[in-house]
Length: 287
Ligand code: NAP
Image 1 (cartoon, rainbow, N blue to C red):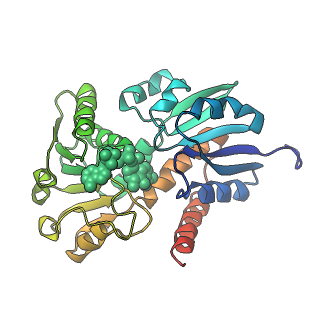
Image 2: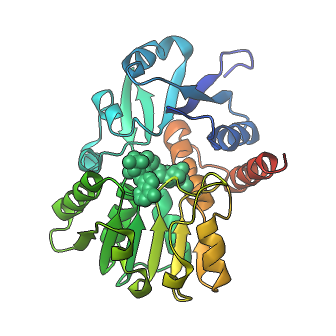
Image 3: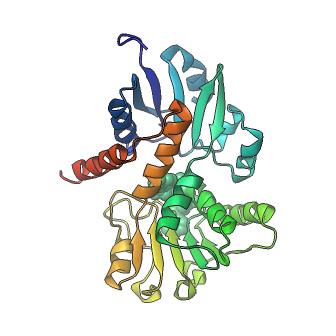
């Protein structure tokens, strides 16, 4: 590729997307591998998704990460490989790539969460509680059921979403024990091995802690999908009682590396991307 040719454009598409760390991570990777490409944030209003994708060719946009609220809606515009067809049921496509003028969909959140979780915790035979039943929770529940967890209790303020996730998991794993609970207390965290926060509660400094300290215990692994702040109130409480914890930065890194490989065909530079994420986190918290 000539130095002066137009850069290929990649980006994150959602509404809103201003908080995303992905531009820093992917632009660092492009730069390190000397790829003539740019990663941008595309904030697209509901109702304007089709128009945006149609005009993407003229802007040389060839790969996108998809975030809230379009992870299901994007299925109207992207095709799936036969082996990725299960994503229709999970209703979660977070990566698309343009091949021969057509968008193709993938999910890298599932493998990203799975890799990071398993570096820290063995889900097989374990009891899990999930707070939140949105797009990310669908990936989390799928990974846990697929990895042989013993059971999941799941809570969301929207009961329809927990019901929907329960049905989705049962369609893949008919004998898997997953219960939608009506109240957060119903999660019975005292009796669990893993607690996952898959809500946005904790992003803001003024957010409350989702659970009381009394229900946490030192044998619990507490995974918060939030990565900024690096330590939510939930993680602070968990650390206080010596429970093992992780935030979502590792998941973000691993899903990003997989998206990078799908788009460029090249292995993602892990350390460069990790450092870019850490740099972004430091920069956002230094003001
Ligand atoms: P989402 O689709 O909006 O789902 C969040 C769910 O949590 C919604 O159903 C929401 O209900 C529910 N909720 C809100 N407050 C609650 C509460 N107090 N108790 C119980 N449920 C509550 O968002 P998402 O895409 O799944 O993302 C969830 C979180 O994960 C976000 O913080 C996101 O940044 C993070 N995430 C991280 C990564 C990563 O790579 N680390 C990847 C994806 C997502 P309502 O819609 O009714 O408010």
